[in-house]
Length: 502
Image (cartoon, rainbow, N blue to C red; front, side, top):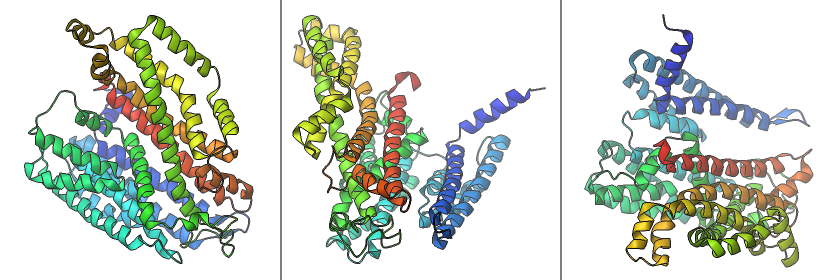
């Protein structure tokens, strides 16, 4: 007789092989958590009142969560009995796609993933590409309830809707014609259209377009090690993909906000709308100057992304180059570079950033420079350690024996084979940079006070924690979600780039 421990382990092994079961469990649990959060958001602790709209939304999320739970139970039963998910169970996914009407993308992801049995990378990219555009449209559409909208609002929304139709058509076409990862050559025009649509910041559209073109160009022949294989491994990690989804939505909203959001609502004082509670007109309420907190958080995401990316890119280039030279040449060059960086490394990064900003003034440019200088030593050390290992490999010795110049070896062989750890570290550093930016802005040493940045918004909201707590809660949640997203994505990218985990 098999022991209970063996049966339990075997059951877990079977269920683990089905991505649909993992996504379904995450979807229903997330829906239940969100329903609880909506109840809490609709309850005013000080006045003892409940907002009916939040309560209704919580009830709808609860219903969808329970339906998804029932589907999870059905999937588990199918897998344990027949080692596959029945067609009738997959058909239930159609009934849950309507969760998009209430903005529940977790249920929608699980439903769309369950509809197709044999899922290619292209189909998965199509799902997240379509959902990204959907989120951007829904966020931008909230401006319809405001007294006035941006001058280019109708043009921006028209472009987004046209792109949304293109993405839905792509999803259907990919599901219909891409079989076993083979891409028909007739999809080449569609791939170019996806690349054009990616100017809105939709990274999934960019990745899908490049993947389609890559496979068409190479005749669908598999190459042992390619970025397509890395993508395939990355998308097996659901948390990493959800992190990338949030990052992509924030990037796309930041770009599209130039057309669909009115900047004056986030910066100009309006004393007729002081400290208003959340409503359709002002989803996150207004601050003590009458500015729309929802608009400020959207524009603040643009600042956070810009500062986070630049404060990571600059030390990656400078620190990576110094680490490469140090690891490749060694001896006196290594000793000089690393000892100089040790002096910089001895000073705490945040303290160094505060000193630079205090000396040269609090503005965005000085903040980027301050944080970038603080991160250079860590990237140089990481690159040096990787280069030391790569420099002793046989193909480097062969290149030297063939008479290749040092600069040719460094840029054609050393750096390309040493980038993986740097890329992973960069994705994690962006989250740290966002926290550092918000922290310095909160202290008055970061971005200028009049600029909508999450740290500045949080600073204003902290003065109303007892009476208007949502003014601090919403920017705080935005910071947490961005940092978690980059951390989840970085962890997933590290696993995808690790050759031992193929």
